Image (cartoon, rainbow, N blue to C red; front, side, top):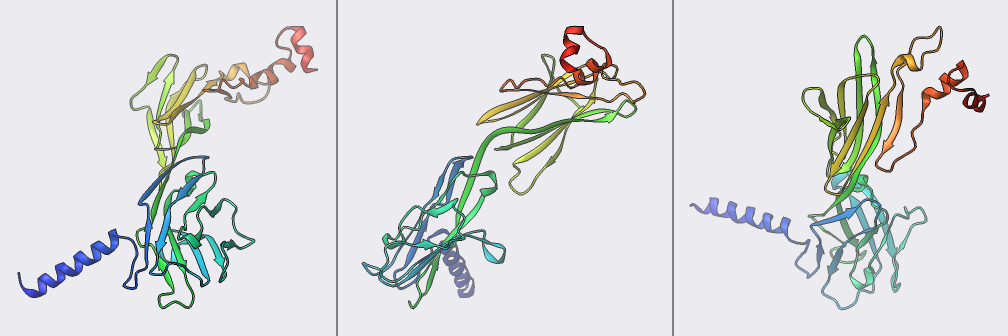
Length: 290
């Protein structure tokens, strides 16, 4: 191996070591973060970040910045300032209250607390400390901390589309992380095969998905079931035959009855509102709608 190739390999190795290690420089400053942090949706989470410097105390003013993302497309989530001699770091009045300092920058602790973590918080976070007047005025972690927010499945919507001529299709919109597995069930039967297809998966992050069931038949019930390692959610719909809700002179609509979820929600008998005022049902029940 010639000298030029050896130098190139050494430079690549140095760059690799710098990317893996904490941000540091020759005058003794360094920064340490956690590579990945996992959180549960709805619960608080702390992103650890600490720094060291060659002096025992830090008397000068400083500023702390936390960003989501890197480069020009990044978003500043938290910013606070600590004047010379102050023991605390004060955020601006406009600061989003979901974010606050968990540590004390004067104690070299820049850890950030995020209250009520949401799936939208997934991403890579970077902490930075700025010391005006110092030879190296700012120090920032180069790796970042990957935040992964996990959530049990939640069915966001269940609907039926189509007509008697084209056929009916049921769609189930689901949210969760890890991305839930979606299944369709008939009356005590798992539905499989070509009648089921995923419609979409949002990127990045892929926390939402939509599943479609074709050839839905009026007069039947169908259950959308979503599961991942954190839990399960399911919703059942009933498709009423058009003749049960037909109003004279109008085209027979297709109504779906929502919903019998995992929490046993009360069924909304939508067809009853149309049927009873037209003279259907016993007299004692019709009077309730007069």
